[in-house]
Each structure stands twice: as structure tokens, then as C-alpha cells.
Image (cartoon, rainbow, N blue to C red; front, side, top):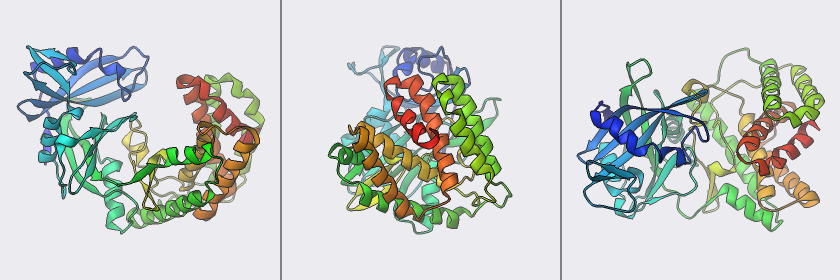
Length: 416
């Protein structure tokens, strides 16, 4: 089923309760910026359960956020505030919202116990809730909602349909209709419940642990590379390839543009100008490039799980604040490989390796990943990894300056 949003005088009042709390959330898209907040509408789930849709404008950011809320007569220290004497609670942490979400959702469903639910810590762009039970699941509450088909629902369903077994299967999903930017109704997804992968280890934490012991990660990286290759094959089966003449020139232009953008934000990158130009020239000299296809779009070690000696790949949403057309656009499959390679560099640094130990561990892990994947055009791969590293340099300079040396070291290798 699809819920329909409505406007209510209480929407603006609820937003006033949330104004100080929202900017403190990890999933708030305009941290540190003066943001304009407005109530779009609300989605009634149950008498005491609602979802407030909040529009956030700040600079280039224009997003609609989903904020599940539960109202109760019981005073509680967890309350975000009060409305007409009633406590306003964060719905993602409350069984009443979870129960109402499952009742409204489509799909085969799951046998879960909402009273034992646990919110996953560390989420950034969304909120995930583990629901134990006979058929346990993990509910991803999409914080930034957008009209259209959400790839984190659509792609896993397609992969399961073509028989690929290394993705948590979707069990339930929920759509809603709300007023768009021009006031006309739009429809999009609010969230998805996927099968819970038991006894799972986060891929990035696992790699960091191996790095911390200076233990070879190459065998596991090779297995991950092989699974990534089968994922790309399954995506071609499910979606086909793009029949266009786009070739290396598009990649070359994108890398050059990324460098100009990164340089304006991080002036110390000026010393890599010659190296970047050399990479761009090498790409332009290629006679052709592989056809574009559907890809993961944001693949790194934090998007994979290791369970029962097998890798699982998840989180096909892409960049949540990017336009849907950009997140679902066919791309070079090697872009996913480049993301994994960059993640290996981060695992070495976070795991505490330095100097020759770091260089040896990453080289070994990178070689294992590429061996498992089966190779690929090295010039294109280097360009795509460079593109990703330039993005990281800007991100770290703005958000984690102490981590800036990680992408700088990557740039030394790729364009030094």
C-alpha cells in the first residue's frame, strides 16, 4: 500500500519541537550551515504515530527528511519535547512506530519482535533498526526521501529475481505520496526491511582488524573481488547495458572537472596538477571504454558483510542526497572496484599501519582484490580511483581534517 501525506496545523508545531534536535542528528544534511526548515506534510500511521516530512534548504542542499514520531501521555526522559502536554519521541526507537510501519508495508514480510528492536549505532545518512525474531530483518528508515524508485529497494529485488544470493533479500517496503516542490503530489519510498544477515562482520571493521595485526587480507579481498564481479554480471542480466557511444573522453573530462573542484577547496592539491594532467591524457588516448551498466554506486568495505565464510553486499542506495537520475544512471563497473581499493587504504590507516608496513599491506590487499575481480583496464581504473580520492580530499578537509593525510597519500601514489 501507499500512504498519503496530509497537512495539519500540528505539522508546524511539531517542527518547532524538533528545531534544536534535528541539526544534532548524524543524518541531518546541512551540518554547520544556517538551514531553513519547513514542514511539508505529515503521514498518519496510527492515532499516536506520525511521520513528519521536513524540507531542509541550505546552500545547494534542498532535501526532504522523514522524521518518525510517537506521541505519548507518559512523561519520559527520552522525549524530544512536548506538544499539548504530550511527550514527543523519536519513532525509530519506539515499538509503536515499528509495528505501524510493518502493518502498512508491502512485500512477503517477516516474523519479528518489535519489542526487542535495536537501533544500529554509527549510521550517517539513514537509520537502521535490527528486528529479532523467527525470520529476523533489518529495517532501513530512509531519512532523505525522494520521488521515484529507490535503488536500495529496486536493485536487491532485481538481483534476487535473477538468482544472485549475496544480497540481503528485501522482505517489506513502504511507499508514500507527499507534496513535491511545485505542490504536485509525488511518490517515493520511506524504507525497506531486508533479511538480517546473522553472525556478520562489517567489512571495514574486519579489514581494520587484519591491518591492526599486519595480517594479510589478500585472500578475503580476492573473494570479495570475485563476488563483486558476479554482482556486476547479475546487474547486466537484470538491467542490461547502456547502448551509447560514450567513451574515455567522458571519464577524462570528469576527472579534470573533479580536480578543478577539489583544488578550489583544498589548495594544497596544486602540487598534483601535472600528475592529474598525465592521467587525464592517458585516458583520452584510450581507443574505447567498456559499456556503461547498472552499478552499486557507493561500494566500499563498509557496504559489505562477512558471514559464514561468504561476502554479502548491501546498501544500493547510492549517495542519498544525489538526484535519483544520477544514482540510477549506468556507469563503468570499475567505479565500484575503485571504491573498494580506496577503502583498503583507509583500513590500513585506521588499523594503525604506517610507512612500509602500510604500503606492503595495501599492495597485497589491492592485488588480491583485483585478482579476484579478474582485472580490468588499468588506465581507467587508475582514473576512477583518482576521481574518488580527489572527492575524499575535499570531504576530509571539511569534516575530518586529521584524516586528510589518507587521501593525500593516495594522491601521491596515483598522481605524485
